[in-house]
Image 1 (tube, rainbow, N blue to C red):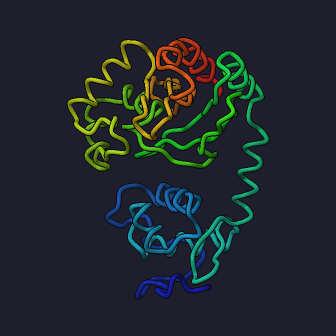
Image 2: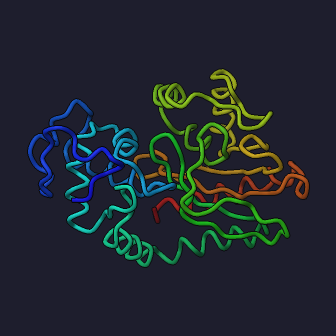
Length: 271
């Protein structure tokens, strides 16, 4: 197998593609299957191909476990090794992505398209995972200015409309754990950077049913978003409308709130 970023297999680690052995008994939490899925998610994250060390850290597993998992995934075609032994997305993972995308309910596109036509603004659909939300769909608005967002981009929870709408529907202890892990980094002068300010904002989000990002994540960009809830009431992601602040007043952006909330409710059984 191709060596990875000059490190090669950890000392004493098996190189069998089976991924068996002690892979499921490391100190990191989760079964062997859960660890494998976390490694695969890390490989698919933006910025790849990735080094073994970075993948192990992102997946929260020892390097020896990450190496065994990657050996198995590479042998099966889900992962490929490239320059300097880094790991990237393999053909079987790309095929799986295409199959999933091709099987997406057409009604998801209809809901997002209707929201875009109602508002005239750019619409995003994102899913929540761990400490971020990741865009999976984008419908461009009618405005002459295009936003820099793209499918696959991961965004913070505390400074985005979708992120705050997700946090507002999580247990308080989980919110505190997430914000403790990531901190509340200042992204613009408007970013909420204290736990007290964030928790006050999340209470307001719950009361009105949608969240506002008032140039908190990116200057000149204002968003309004609502959480998409799963069957258990836990948020799986969110939908948002993005406006360019110099072109759309805040009051107009806030007026999109009921439409965004209705779109989130329509998307709930589809995700």
